Amino acid sequence: MPTETIQEIAIKALEGKKVDLVIGFTPGTRPLTIRPAFIDDPSAVKKLVWNDFCAINPAKYLLKHPKRVGIIANGCISRSIVMYIMEKQIERRDIYIIGVPCAGMLDKYKINAFWDKKKKKSLSSESGRVLLSGDGQIREYPRHMLLRQNCLSCRHKNPVIYDILAGKPVDENEQVTDPDIEALEALPTPDRLQYFRSIFSTCKLCYACRNACPICYCPTCFAERPDSQWAGKQADRPDPLAFHLLRAMHCAGRCTDCGACENACPAGIPLTKLTRKLNKDIRLLYHFEAGLNIETPLPFSVYNLEDPQEFMLTEELKKTARVSAV
Amino acid sequence: MERTAHTWEPKIVAFLCNWCSYAAADLAGVRRLQYPPNVRIVRVPCVGSVSPLFILFALRQGADAVIVSGCSPGDCHYRSGNLYARRRFQVFKNLLHFSGIEEDRVHFAWISAAEAELFVKTMQEVTMRVRILGPLKHLKSS
Image (cartoon, rainbow over all chains, first blue to last red; front, side):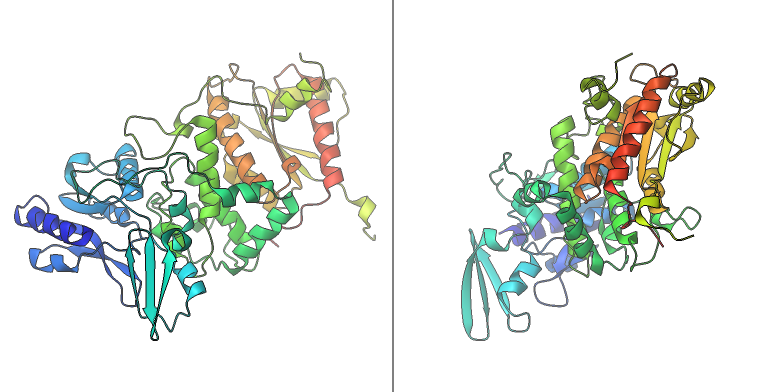
């Protein structure tokens, strides 16, 4: 079982003085929640768990603990670690990565939709089935019905970089698509506008998404610039839409689709709609996915002379012979 | 004076690179070629320096459309600024369109210093398209 294996590996790493600290997950204060764990003593290793709710991205804490630290990492978390190495925030030799193959994390909103929040007592899952019990009942659901949206379209479940693997690798599905993104793309533009205005209507600009995101680590965020006011601070104006569009652009080609943003949002906004759309575009246009390979340069750091440019207005005008090519 | 629907004129912000597109605009002026006064020009050293932050800021401050125009690939005064920008603009245009902003509100163009007519035609085209779309209301910050 992953939890036991992780605990054994962590005890060995701490006792063998390989690391001074292990960053992982521990159950939260309420049912079906998780908290980050910072274990610096072998006696505390029993706090570490790996379950269906490990949806935060603990890689972010590596920025504060960049040396002699162990970290539990599944596919998306390991990709965040690769991004940190590429962007020169940490050194590979300073961290000990305990890799965990991942079956995806469950979506608390989907669970609440099926089961009244107050009634549920416990959850257990085994090979494709999830059992919710409480209030004298037990109900069973297929796992894919309760998975988080970005876990459903996950292309890298196994860690891409690790020192030791706590479990057998799982099968990958590299052909998976994002049907909800494709559905949104097929809508007429005014309907999409309506959709995004409605989901961002509850955004209070708390910046929990940005704080949870591993790839958002600018010392001064663009949204905190009082001189330029790029996105604004007023939640009842179009400012949230501007903030999220610009943050998505700053993470374009760097986002590893961990969904920590969506998990952190107190208003339950489906933020991965924007991130997955950008990841899809960059995958199709520039054949790039973030965090897979330390050697591959980031898509916006390079260019190709053959990059597509049909989107440019002058190309369109020249092609339709509205204007003669000079 | 009372403002009615047909007195609305689109406000278009044009980020033009100093070496090519701004020179083209200047040449259009020298040659007395008429182009719509709806276009407000912002001169930048290179379109490689134009960030998505600027484009969205212009739309939030009241622009109904934005056009960013630079040197064509291979001709950048700084060698490759426009090549980096090309990728950035493609992805940003897709993102804006996905979020519900009409495609014709954000344009990108290659206009070189001698192409005064192309500049005029491009500005005329953008103004015409945006006039059909109407004012951009939902992004204004006040």
